[in-house]
Image 1: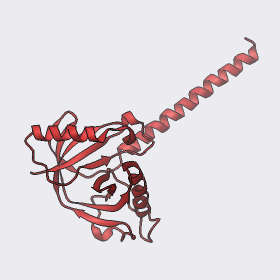
Image 2 (image 1 turned 90 degrees about the vertical axis):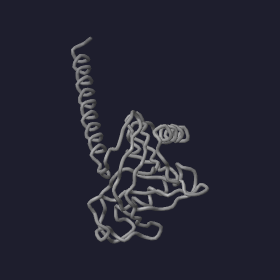
Image 3 (image 1 turned 120 degrees about the vertical axis):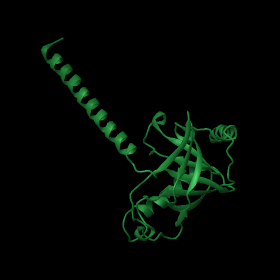
Image 4 (image 1 turned 135 degrees about the vertical axis):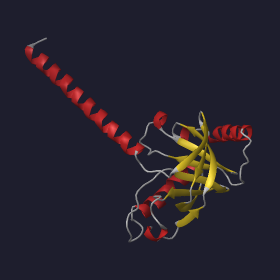
Length: 205
């Protein structure tokens, strides 16, 4: 190896190390930002592996209706709600992003998509929603949940619902008639194994 080629090789090694270091720092910041996105407070009632029972207080939720398969519906519903909280569809203030994003089947290929509003914001502080979005005041509730990772498009939701239903029955819990809620906690950029997804099923206290 010539002296010049040796210097070039060292430059590539050093440059590659710098790029990798920057990527690691950027990735760590991204993970911290995702982890620190606010979510509603809840009280743990019980927990067993991937399953849990939680008590949530009342929440304001911005909701919209979307039609299509699950993936199509959440994409269009997410855009509608993002335009609301980022003040692109109204003249009011922006609303901080929170998690989870909620999705619930409400009819034949009809879905309700919801963004939970910041828990410390009263209704008077929330901007009036545009046409196509409504603010719903969800009452306090107890939910049984199953938690799992993976990209939503690769998850077998029917299997996860079956797991949750079996666990709820084994615990002697009584479901309340509404359809399960799908709860998503991460942006699409988050790798599947690091994602947090949940299915919520409301149960009697």
